[in-house]
Amino acid sequence: MKAAILMGSKNDYPVVERAEGVLKAFGVGYETRIISAHRTPSVAEAFSKGAEAEGIEVIIAAAGKAAHLAGVIAANTPLPIIGLPIKSSTLDGLDSLLSVVQMPKGIPVATVAIDGAENAALLAVQIMSGKHPELREAMRKYKQDMEQEIILADKEFQEGKE
Image (cartoon, rainbow, N blue to C red; front, side, top):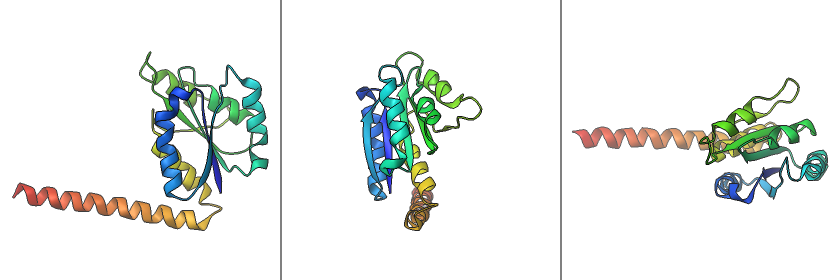
C-alpha cells in the first residue's frame, strides 16, 4: 500500500511533513515529490499518468496560492486525489483553498482544511482501508483512542474544578 504526496514548492514541506508522519504511523508507504502544476507541467502530467502503474493508490496534492496542482493531477489519473491547500502569505490560504475546492464537473478533488496535512493523510488511510482491512482496523483503533483521550481530558477537567 502506497500513497504519494506532491507539493508545489519545497516551502510546503513543513506542512507536508505532518502528513508523512501520519502515513508512517499507519504503516503506509509513501513518496514525496516537488512537482509544480505551472513550472513543471510535463512532469505533473507524466507523474499522474504513471502513478497507478507505480502502485500508488491515493495522491495528496499540496499547493499554495493558485494551487492548481491537485486539479492538474486529477485530470490525468483515475486515482483519488486529496487537495491540501497551503497557507500563503498573501491571503492566508483562502486563495489556495478556493483554487483546490472549486473543481469543474468531472475532475473531483477531495479537499481538506488549509494546512490540514494530518486530515489529508487520515483521509488517504480511510480511502485505502477499502482495499486493506488492516488499515480499517487501525483507523477504528485510532478513533477509539481519540475518543478515550477526550473522555479522560473531560474527567480530569471536571475533577480539577471541584
